[in-house]
Every structure is written in C-alpha cells, then in structure tokens.
Image 1 (cartoon, rainbow, N blue to C red):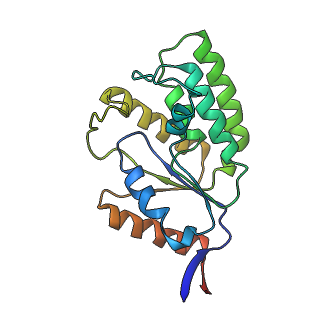
Image 2 (tube, rainbow, N blue to C red; image 1 turned 90 degrees about the vertical axis):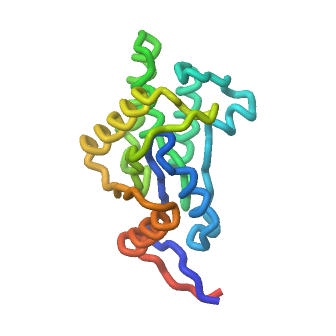
Length: 195
C-alpha cells in the first residue's frame, strides 16, 4: 500500500480564537495517514479540567488556569512530530484579554518572555481567522467582543513576530483539510512510502 508521510516538518499547529473551525479540521487531520505515528495534542484545557488541575471558569478570567494551560503548551514544544490544536500563541493572546491587574501583568511578562524564546519552535502554523459569529455551547468563550479582541491579539503576534504562517480560507471542513494538505505537500515535502 502506498501512503504519504510528512518529511522534514516537526510540528503542525492550528491557531485561532474559539469557534473558528479548528476542532472540526483537527478531528479530520488527526485521522489522516500523514500524521500516523505523530503525537496528537488536543484540548489541553479540557484535559486539565478532567484531571481537576484547573477549575471551570465560564468567564475565562482565571490567571491560574491560563498559567497552567500555557505551561502545558510549552511542554508540547519538546515533542517531535506533533499535531496540536493550539499553541503558546493562543494562550498568551487569550491571557492578554483578561481583566488587567498586577497578577495578570506578572503572568503576561512571564508568558511574553517564554513566547519570545520559543516562537520559532511552534512549527508550521495554520491560522484560522474569524469568519462567522460564535455559538454558545457552554464550553467556549461566548463574549463576541472579547473573541474578536483575542483574534486581533493573535494577528498582532503573527504580524510582529514575523513567523511563517498560512491563513485558512472560509470554506468547508473538507476543503480546509485539502488546503492544509496541499500546503504541507508544497512546503514540507510529503514523502511517498510503501507499507
């Protein structure tokens, strides 16, 4: 059987605020044979909630939660061959949307320093901009103004850090997956192998 595997690239990261279609695309990508043998890192915050390491904060204002989630995404940077549904960029930019106080400012300085030291280790970034309004499903941020501010923070980091990223178009999940695979094939050299 002939299949395709990623060669050269070490990490693929989906980036964007909530309700932009990342999870739908991620769920398809993680099943794709090109990621066979890769570490699949998804929904760190949900995992931490299940493990009782962070509390459920419907207002998304907990600096403790943000700090723990950020630290978990830092650990992902050490995993080779990793597909991730978020990155330290997502968490840092979400922290920037918290109500400002001294604890938030201290945490932002810590996260900013770590981000600056590690931004080139995030891998191939696929950025999902906001194309539609969010839906209140009880899990995600439902404050539309804050969601848009989060997205602007992400754009600001991408622009000013000069990292290489690809913008995902507004199309179906199937077409988004095809788009990502086409970019990976072009930029990252997919290698045909016999199984």
